[in-house]
Image 1 (tube, rainbow, N blue to C red):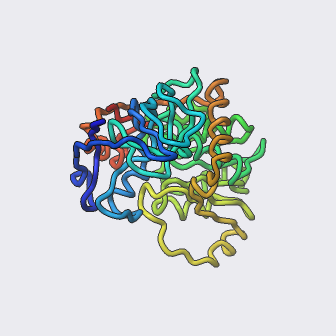
Image 2 (cartoon, rainbow, N blue to C red):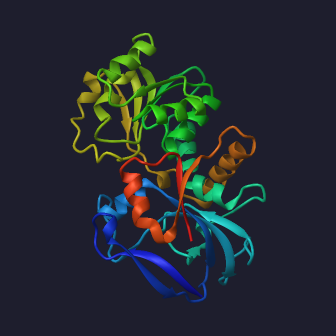
Image 3 (cartoon, rainbow, N blue to C red):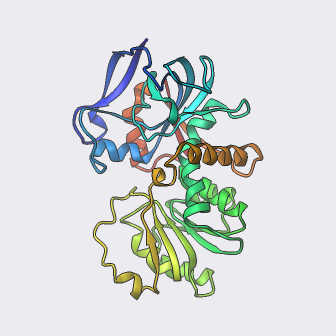
Length: 325
């Protein structure tokens, strides 16, 4: 099967994204050949492209996609040609019209979960699941802070946190995005650029601060996250949209109120096939009953992947972004 795929020969800006036509062999043992129907664009893709997260070059890009099984390799069970499937990594190569994927990395899609919904939500939704339920362990009544609350993960975090009964304070870059966060259920939304942001958060929590801060922005918000979190609270730094936090004086956690801090990654919480299947099932349940809704803010043709990366990094996107092969 012939496929068109995106590769990088060197790290850098969106200009390093290149296309190649490749002939795919038949899948080997434990492998599946899938034809892509929708591809998810995520900030981690820009980290791989820029070199923030080093990858061996030349490198394929993209971790999240939905598609249709074309053929299966020896030993693959539970999947057959024609099945609708989705993956969120950890293997890269989703920026392609077709590719070969380990069967263990695939989740079979229920009939009531559309391909675009899966491609827009698998990585972000499973990230949200582990952040709220297994990392933050948020309980009803807790005040929490969500930075970039109108982003792809941010909007899902707001909805999921409201579903478990938390009081959600969000930050966004613009009033337009603030409206999106409020529509998702945020109780309070503050603009990220305003002065005294941490003090505003403390005012909203009776001076105490929040129990958990979800920070996917990184360098630009880390200090605010520390200052806005209550004594013995938890700061979850899970992304680098503004750049890496960098070296941290560990004693600052004591000075800020005996805080806890973690820098989790998705695949330390989705190690086994059982964890992957359980997490995906939980996500599908939340989607199915309407507890969370996925906002696809923009769609780009796969051929326009450079412009999609430019818009994502310039924060011109809202919600989830899809590449359509």
